[in-house]
Image (cartoon, rainbow, N blue to C red; front, side, top):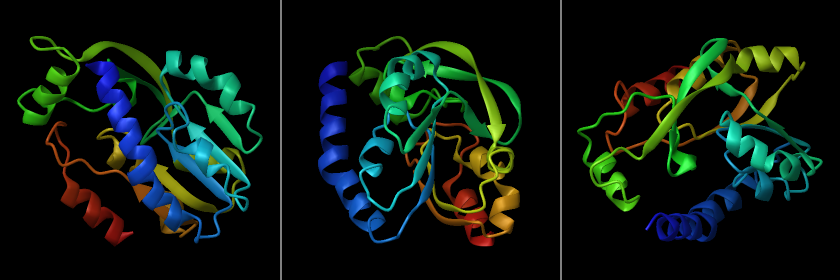
Length: 209
């Protein structure tokens, strides 16, 4: 079931969802991109084919996934694949590793969520959680990364972090205030799977900035 589910999700993402997004991105004259929650490069690799793109900094905190994909992704000249997470602070943070690794998360899980139960069922975990273990990941803020690498402007900040989006945004406060980030592409969740997660608060935060 897990293999079938992953295959269907990837097909929908590649030939429908991603196709629509990339059609718009090609019109934006992007040069420097931060891909927060890069996983195996599902977003970074096709993005690197856009001629105007100069550099993609792709962040993936999961150690096993990073080790599997590091050689392949860093062989693409435009991509810098980095085994670190962006958040609202520096240090170490526990990440919950899911059976479907693209949905691993730093967020607290709402075990009563209907979507969470349905997802467990699809992944063959009828009576158990689809989260297999936790591990510590290195985290820093977007502001610190931009400053350390002397990046003047970010054309696109893409965030897909399974409920951790607000913390990622909080780590970019200085650059959001300075308007040095031109576009933000952010995934929001409707399934009430994560505790302390509120779409409206993210929306208000972005409008305020």
